[in-house]
Length: 391
Image (cartoon, rainbow, N blue to C red; front, side, top):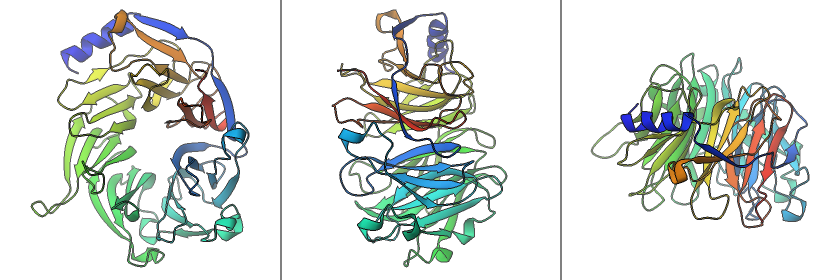
């Protein structure tokens, strides 16, 4: 840890916190009817301009899609479809994998299943919520290879998904890419290129460069040996024929989910850690560790957004191993941690919940300010969102 990072951490741990809002935000349940909700990934599945959700339920053995019902009904349980029934589901993400205009789902299983699955959506929009119209296929090359943890569709141009980045955890933990075959539904022809050994890949983000079309790098967090850290992994070029791995952060922490903001002058990664606070890595600057207030679980997910409308980014932080502590909080104006000599925090979740997961910052109720979408895996809260109380 750098000297500046150590000093900042020490100052914050010494109690320079101001609680500017205490008590839970209003929680709304999207679905709590299965067990072990494990992650939320958003995209527009039906073309209505609203955020829909894919989630794998690890203990429940189902993968589901939730369609945003519109702002008038957003506080009610959302319309849903079980797109597949697979064991040990750890991750699910929406993507049109065969180019037919319908958003399919890719899911990743760990445990004893150790398989990547494609859940093919019906092409007819009116059948999207019909579970019988979905078809599940295992990617044969993925079966038994490793415990799959996270996937990310990679695009060429503005729409066509051509590759899948995938990461796993030990045994045989790794990060790599599946190339989708010319006939996408011939999943046996999908080919795997291993990039690097990893111990436990937590998250993968993509930087598509200044024009937003060509993949510039994968941004990856890995929490366990080998190769603990955060990395930028650049794809092959004419001059360099293989993927190039560069370190963003080293093995001094157990790195969890990350949030990445791209840009040639202001690219930055903020990553949760399970053994300390979130760490901000901005291009060309010393890393900043934000220590956390007392009464929290261990770090799990992190995301940025301006929750109070003051023009400065705030940080939402989720935790696991909560056990009667706070599980989701906001750190206000995280990019200026010395503001007024204090780092403000807001209790979002209260004391309900034990194991929260990755978080998304998005305005779900259409009132102009961002809300918090997440899931809780142990106490049965399920797929949930917290309503921003700002008026």
